Image (cartoon, rainbow, N blue to C red):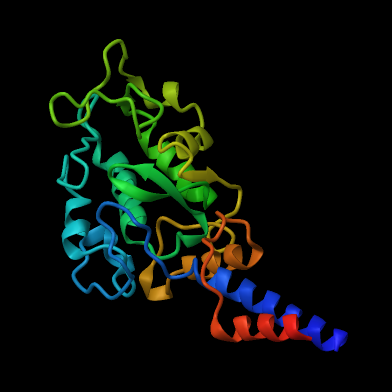
Length: 248
């Protein structure tokens, strides 16, 4: 009986692990504009189109992601002068990843904020994505290190706070690591993993080759190295195992 009870408890543990892993795969975070569940979106706009087969964003959200000071967050990239297209494309891609990707589940954390209930934390970005982002934006100007908070919103959109000074982006973010990890308060984590390694999330990918981030999310979900998975009700079979084990 003790052997059977041990086997049932082991089975329960395995099932619980599978449930926890699967609960963070193919999910949308509880954000301001995210869909409840990922699904096809044939009309996703331009840089957001790689996610059209399975997206957490709508076509309208993808369109707004490409607009200056869109309705999404009333956020302007041009707080210290006009941002170049070479740089802006990276911020658009960053927005598309955030709004559209169903592969960020392992790094979703609950937050108590008026405009969202969940956020991402320490998503491991591929080395090339961070470095090219920094390279293409190093001549831009900014006045802040943390773009998530601390802005002057008195005009309805973000402006540099009183006492701040516009300076070259490299003065605020001396390295690609600084840019990726600090600009959105640790939403991303700089890694030395290259694209295609299945160990880092790619902001840029060719949808004709499939979405490489599916395998990355699955790896971190199995390894349990992302954010803690939410506690979910045990499946019926797991509950049965637990009940039987208790009676033996």
